[in-house]
Image (cartoon, rainbow, N blue to C red; front, side, top):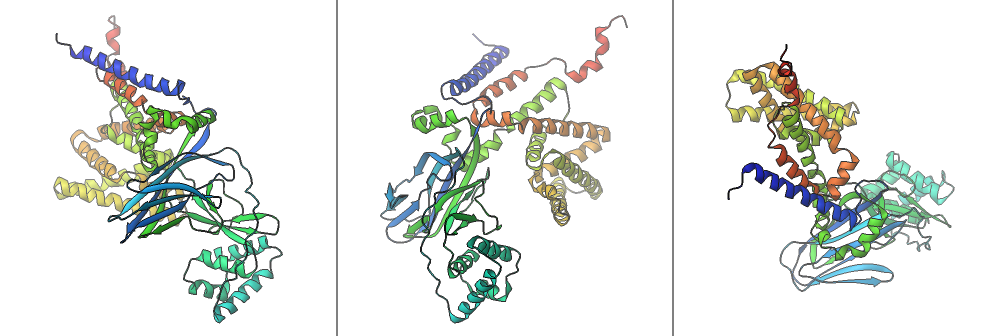
Length: 509
């Protein structure tokens, strides 16, 4: 018995929609994932990658693991150590992960992934101040150091004000010849010079190493803050900005002396991080802490991917939402657009640039590009050469716009680089051909339709509820696929055609 295409579509769409909704309800009811952001808790997924080049002989890698500090809670730790013996042990109150292997002949990457959330904000533990080790200096550096410390102490009445004055002068480049000499002759970084000055001034101090939490960051490295002791309490300073206090988005990995990563039997070692932010209710977080290893659905979900890939999918999962908007506008409303994917990609660019800035940049670049393309049409160039010329012109326009906006302190316009260059070039080429074949009126209709679709897609894709559902319930994409297939069978009137055929409903006229 042959099944008709209409029945096949009905069966397939019914199965897809039901299956997607069933998985969503399962995660909502059984696993406790909320369908709306509601009372939410920010959860950060952090993945560290240790990469190095092996040398002859055995390989031993040790890494200090983070501990719960300043109200941060850790859970759901995972280690990837294929081919290595692995152990986590406690050394003098510090957890350390250790990998070992007898030999290795190729570049290797080890992974450590965990999740954190801040349950509350509490002060750091008031640990004892460390012993001060005075730096060993050559006579000329000793003379310069004495002059710098003496000058700073004249304008300071405490270790805190001394440190503030030191960082302010370094930031303002008002450090004098002696400090410039110390910086110029120091083999290590500016941070090392700051630590030497604090030690010479008899200010108890140590480093605080960690990472700044920024959503979607990849290849992020360890940042270092300075913590000084005034005799009673500890005070944290950011040597890069001079600000006092622990930043809210800073996660402490290690507090005190010592290195985070030690590699024996390797060279060119590097520790990098990838970050993804998510929002979940506290009860779901507590559930995951206890049962994440027991849930098969979670093991084969987006949460099992490396954090770097999760950050990529966080944006990719919004594309079907934009595609749905374009399908609805074209199939049911009847709005004409310049292609199907162009409005979606422009909407993704708007997510990065914000709507008004993105519209301004898009209209400016496309407008100038169309004028350039109009001139190139008189040169009778081949299609490949013409499009290549348009791509080069678009890049030059975007570079010029970035430079001008930077000189004018218009930071928003610097986001021009988020616009897809190839899509802009093809848009200019498509619009120019359409202008030649159909006239400027059709260009205006399709261009305005594309921008309207991109704007609606942006508004939907930037909604917190949509971001929450697409990332935490990617199973909804299955139901969305079924709905799109169902729309593909629609052959009725579009909304814009109701005006065209309005007299068919009034036979007396």
